[in-house]
Structures are given as structure tokens and as C-alpha cells.
Length: 616
Ligand SMILES: Nc1ncnc2c1ncn2[C@@H]1O[C@H](COP(=O)(O)OP(=O)(O)OP(=O)(O)O)[C@@H](O)[C@H]1O
Image (cartoon, rainbow, N blue to C red; front, side, top):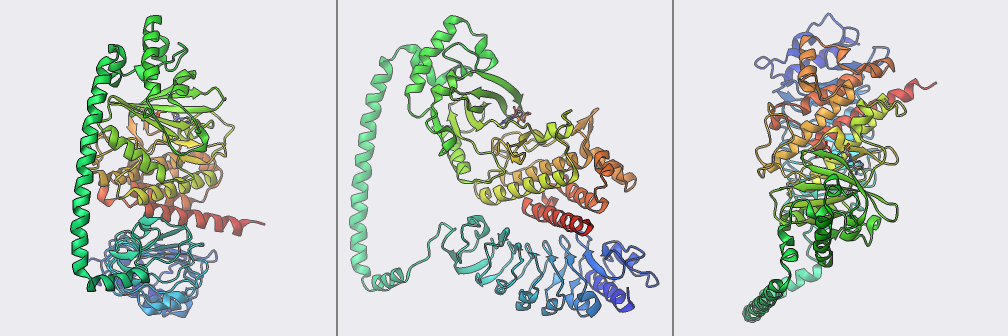
């Protein structure tokens, strides 16, 4: 590496390290000018295979609190012509992204998220034709967004949580995998995103309107009407009073009719035999018993004949009520009735923290799974709203509920049965038929991360996190694709127990529950990397990994199967670093799932690229 490149690297880091005060540990290693960044393996620097040019700089999470001056890097032709990846996220860097960035023509990844960068994004960013991932989120950037529509390979653009203004320029939304400009000051109509992105990518911009946000933009006709209405304000007031009186009369009429209906209901209820009237307060097993006496759940099998017939009578009353089983819009179980579930033979699959799980085989041969949650302190109304909201948010790697039932004591959730087991069994089971190699593990990690990032984005406002993320809740579907199951069945922060171990700081609020999912995801990553159980001989996996890392940076942490198939050590370590960030004891210091997904995708892309370059 020539001297000019070397000294520009040192000046760049010196400025980022705020010259003298908070000197990054890196600087002391880099500053030894007699050494070579590639041959002497400067930390954070990755070179080409011949060790002649710099390819990547990893200066993320490095306690940097100085100024960003990309001109220093991009102003040196040799460096600008080779640098592909620049990671500066999670520091305390100030300053801005200057227009000289456009000289770093080979940049494919620019990550500056989680700093204090200000100023506007330069229009010259549009000249970076090779850019794939641009993450400037969580800074203090203002001004307008540049038009990046000409960068055809751009797959990720993240600029959420800044102070950006103006209208959203054109983007090639069909190419983008991740896009987020939420929580800024953007204005005007959202361009056509072709259904690729949901409202969560745009929320938190007061003056933004149009699909996919629920807020419609005023049409020009409406604008005219507004003008006219200003002239006729008096007429409007008169009309308003008229409508108000009419509305009031309607409300009174409805209340009167409801009172009448309730009285009639009360009479009918009193006329029913006692057994049927008690249904609403049924014993916690009663709903889940077979009318034929065949086994739906173990307890049902142990019922006496008289109990069964009593239950059958109760059931007929339950079944006749139309509100008992809410079938969500799913072709899978079109026409499914609560009665069908009760009649079908069933076996118990497990009894976990959130309830018991049964496999049910319907008459038509369809296999379903019924989760029975007892004593969930959530009203039927809230539960219904929660399930209906969850049904609106669909991701191919998240298992949707097909139907639900709710009573005071228990809630039932119906899912499709997945015959290929779960991630826990694939990793720790004895089934050698499913070889779980490095590429598959990385693929699984990326798919779960994307699925969770999507769910978190969509359900941020509803404060619905997964709540109980673990490898046995990652099912493998018929195509052996990972599928997150039982999303949203624990409402953390509402008095419900978090799934986290006691030593870890738990979510104090339901919004923080998203960070508990990040912890759960981190543990899954550790399972994927080490092949070890979460608890082994009383030792917690996160504690074990951290103790090994403290001793020395060693490959002993990794699953021997991964080492023997020669998985790239660099990528194993990168994935381990992501896992360690996720299992940080303090929720605030964990990254968001969005950020995790970007990090994992970057590792996956690097792995794919290097696999291609090794192909004969
Ligand atoms: N839809 C499904 N299809 C097939 N198997 C499933 C399905 N849902 C869950 N399972 C499997 O059934 C078993 C029992 O599930 P259950 O949810 O009761 O256990 P758990 O995950 O240990 O408990 P919890 O989630 O309540 O903490 C697990 O092995 C799980 O992977």
C-alpha cells in the first residue's frame, strides 16, 4: 500500500478520533507509520487477496467522537478507486457527508447509522453507481433527499430518524429490499412504491400523505372546495349545527334500542338450563373436549362418560353461538367451525410457557395446531383486536394464525401444522438427514432477521413484539424455509412475563419488548454459530460465549461442524459480533431488528460474493 493511502487512512481516523482527547484504541495501532495496513493487518482494515489495496474499513462501534471528513479518504485516487465498504455506524461522529463522497466511485456499502451527523445528504451521492446499501439512519441530517433513482443496484436505503425535509424524490422501489424514511420532516405525496413498502417506512412525517399511509392527500378538487368553503363559512356553521342535532338524535335512538335488546336477552338467559348458562364461566378444560369422547388433549381422554355428555350439551350451545371461533381470512381453513376442532382427534405436542399445544387432524385430513393460552390478562376485545391486527401483517417467514377463539379464562389460536420440525431440533436433534451447513445457517439467520425487522416495523405503533423468541418457535415449513411461529402471543410490558433470563435487563415498557426480541434473536444466532444448547449443565450459552471471548479470541466458540466445512472465519466472527451486540444486557444498547437485518445481509452478500470468486 503506498504511503499516500497510508497517511490518508491515519488522518481520516485521527479526525474521527477527535485528534487527542478520545483517542480510539485503533489509532495507536494504525499510527505506526513504518508498518503496512494490509500486510500488518491493521484492525478494521480489509484488503484484497494480494494485499495491495484497501477494500473495506470497519470502524463501527469504535468509540469515535470526532469529525467525518470523507474528503480525506476519497481525495486520494488510489484509495477512492479501491474502497468498497465503509462502516462507521454506532459511534458519536459529527460533521456531515461532504460532496467529495462521489469520488469514492467503488463504494457499495456506506453505513453511518447511529451517529450525530448533520447537514444535508449531497446530491453527488447519486453518482455512486455501485452503491447497494446506504444507511444514514439515526443521525441529525436535514435538507432534502437526493435523487438516487439512477443507482440501479441500490437495495437498501435507510434514513429514518433524522430531520430530513422536502418531498420524497423518485426511487426505484421495485429494486429496493429495505427502505425507511420514517420519523423525519418529509412533506407531500409519497411516490408510488408499487406495494413494496408499508406505512411503517413513512410514519412520523407530519406532512407526508398518500398510500401506503392512511392519510389521504387532498385532491385539487378538494383544494377548490376548501377555497369555496372559506367564502361560505356561515352556511357551514348552520349545516354543522344541523348535523350535530341529527347525530345526537341517532345516538339516543341506538342507546334506547340496545337497552331494550339487553332486557330481552336477560329474559332468555334466565330461561336456559343452569348448565348451559354457565358456559361463559366454563371450567378451563371444557372448551377443549371431544364431543365423541375421542381424545382432544390428554385431559379430555380422562373424562368420565357423564362428564363428556355434560360437556357435549355445553358444546352444542357454544357451537350455536356465532362468535365462538373467529376464522381469519384464510383459504386454508375456509368454513372451519369450532365444532370441527372439538370433534377432531388430537394429540398434545407440548406444554410451554405460553400454554399448551395440540395437533388436531381434521376430517378432511388437514393437520392443524391449536395453542391454548390460559389466564392471559387481556380482555376478549383487546385479544380480538390484537389478532385482527396481526392478521393484517403478513410475511412469508412468519406463520399466520388461521383462526382464534376467546373466552374469559383462555384463548385458542389455530395454526397450520408444519411437518418439518423446528430450528431447535435441526440444530440439536439427532436427525442427520438434514445437514445444517454454514450457508443454510446464514440463510436461516438472514430470513428470520428480515421477517422480524418487517414485523417490528409494521407493528411498532401497535407495540406488538414476538415476546417469546427462541429456536423452538422457528418452524421449518414444507420447503424447509424458516417460519417464525406464535408471533405476539405474549404481551410484554403489560404485566406479562418476559422470555428473557432474570439476569438480563427486561423490557420496562411494551415498546422495549422489541429489544427483548433482539435479545432472543441474538441467542438464536449463538445457537447457530456454536451448535450448543441455550442451557447446558446449568451454564447459560451467552455467559459461556462471553467467557470464552474474554479469555482469548478463539475459534473454539464455533460449532466444529462449521470449522470442518471450512466456513469463512471472517464471516463467522462478523456474525458472532452481531450476536454479541444483540445479547447486550441493556435493551437500549441493542441494535434494532432493522439494523440487525442489514448487518446480516451484508455478511451474507460477502459470503455469496466470495463463494462466486472461488468457483472454478
Ligand atoms: N404450527 C406448528 N406445527 C408443527 N409443530 C409446531 C407448531 N407450532 C409449534 N410446534 C412445535 O410443537 C412443540 C411444542 O410447542 P410449544 O409452543 O408448546 O412449546 P414451546 O415453544 O417450548 O413453548 P412456548 O412457546 O409456550 O414457550 C415445539 O416443538 C414446537 O416447535
